[in-house]
Length: 543
Image (cartoon, rainbow, N blue to C red; front, side, top):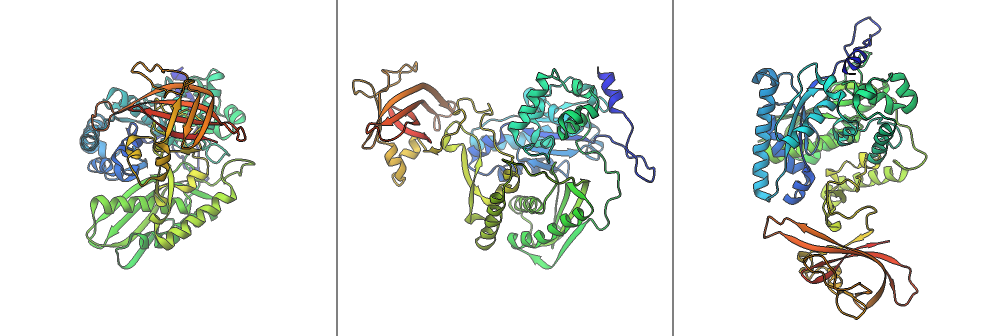
């Protein structure tokens, strides 16, 4: 089957109008992936972006121009760094050691442990899957050149779900294609059709896949054959596509640099749009008055909008100021599109996806942030946890890509990485039921939480022993002066966190109950109560 895939992958190459052949070959890349980075950043009490920067700096020492697709993932081309150190294997070993050392320093300060993986292969998808394998084995994995197609042919198509943050949502530009749930449904459909591995997909004709799946089929065909998602552009790039902004004097204010660059980004995106093009890879260079430079590559599968360019600039500028500490202000900003694709537009959905209200909210957030500073507005960002009150945290508005979020890049709460977490649907109102929160006397809601009582039919408090056996069935729940009769219940569900750290260890049990107030005038409601150190507390309400 692998030989058939090779013959299918080496089909005719596209030609430009002047007869020049454009080689459609994947770039050999390195993918560095840190497993469960969001959890580690949450344990540090910092945003995922800022906490990840020391890891990025450890890689920049060996490969100056890297791409940070998302916190926890670093990508860069092997050409240059690989030749300098003597090959792909020495490069993988060097990068793995550097990242491991950086993570060890971070882990020592947080008492958290995590794994990293380094994969090298032809194409982003093959390298991403190699990095996943490397996370499990704790050893870098290098797929030999020209062998990625055969190696990828045996990989399961389900690996696509874990690589969305690296390759971008397949079929981007299609309504709902950025939704991870729709993406998982697509992979499930492929498996039901008997297409379990990439070799099975690559053996099919691309025209048939496009006829059946549309944009999904086009991208899946290319990825399964070891190619990058975007084919080479068969037209000449527009002139004057590099934008340079030079200030009269060094600018010390971060917000002033971002505001000035916003107009530059708008001009660049509009200029490319008039040519029917969109950029998916951007080279961003910042330079200070003393010659200090910060350059980084950025990638977005669906294409950069002006706002996306500004957000990436803000991210890079924050990292530069925080960790490199330039000794003078910024004197120039350079935007260079490195990869362009045909701008096919974005089809609006009849339901779901981005709405007019979302766009109005984005403009309102930007307006208020420009007037009062980005710290004046906070938005919820998913960080993951077993406690429903800590699954999301409020962060500054400029640390979250609001445009991509409203376009459908939603967090799937059913992901099984957090064992013991509440299943979907998520509760509509959550409380911090931990003992640390209950000790805070200034939290009004926790005052009510402390008065929760769960009673059995004899009016005794329900307890749970070490074997998680209940002393009796709960019949009523008392919250303050209100008494609720229990109509149904489930549990108890044990919860044990950080057992290796005596200072932060936590052991508790959850109980899910459906209750109704005794006056019978209210409807039934569901709630989650937590028993910790023989004290019941309210954790969540369901609407």
